[in-house]
Amino acid sequence: MAGGGGGAPEPRKHGKGKKRKKSRRLGIRMDMTPLVDVAFLLLTFFMLTTSMSRPQTMEINLPPDDVNIEIAESNLLTLRVDAKERVFWSVGIESPTRIEFDALREFLRQRSEANQKLVTLIKVDREAKYSTMVNMMDELNLANITRFSLAPMNDQDKEMLSRVQS
Image (cartoon, rainbow, N blue to C red):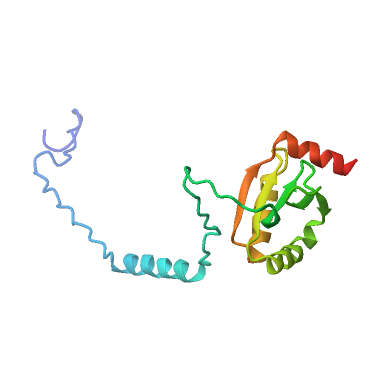
């Protein structure tokens, strides 16, 4: 029965008889030169456009622990800052006097010019803000006072300030 009549249809051939040759994949090669150029361009752009800010630090020299330095009371200016961030000054064992923070720099300059041996002692209440102590140190720096010390405010200082404020 060769011609097609009435029997079962012949199955289709899907290429089983022929071996299909696998095509080899071509290797992809990317040129990285433009990417490196762009990376260096961005790097130089950001380096040149960002502001080069120096850290804002102040050098503090600490004396050795075993050295006691005697200072005459007339050469010791004490600045006290209370919990309400009010500034008081005194020389030696005098009673403290209140001074406005805005007038502090000029006051410090005058005192420093009048007494070359002046040493400033800063006492800040623990309840005051940290920025207040930093501002006090900045004012000393701007007034060209390089000899100063930091000390904790004790109960005797608080009592002295309470008598002045009353």
